Image 1 (cartoon, rainbow, N blue to C red):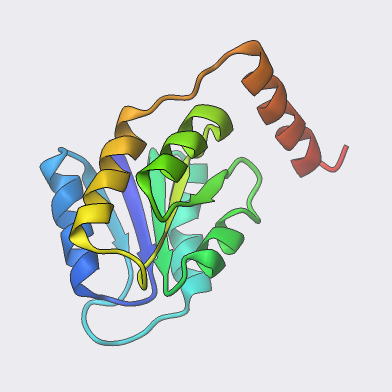
Image 2: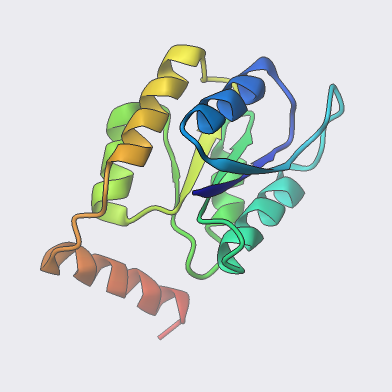
Length: 147
């Protein structure tokens, strides 16, 4: 799977994220600083999400200090369902019930242990794809199209 990453800061947890994704045999497309510089979270999020919309990446992971800004920016795009997940239980629900295709993470709240738990759950949980949940996604798509 091709995963695009957008982050405004290059921290040790970003290195860990990239390591964990490669360990799971994902291809990485990285949009973020190369070292200590800070970038705009809006721009790095947009770059990562646009690859999903253009079918150049299967999913995206977007990060900023709280994860809130990145998730808000990602959710401005039709077809993106970004979920801010600070734990594995939230990641599970986002996948099962919301068919989330973008994982938003908080740089302030991540450590190696919870990152690994979130990623394990994110990649192992599938959308339930039943009548009720499909009805919810259909309603979200209707809202996106302003109808």
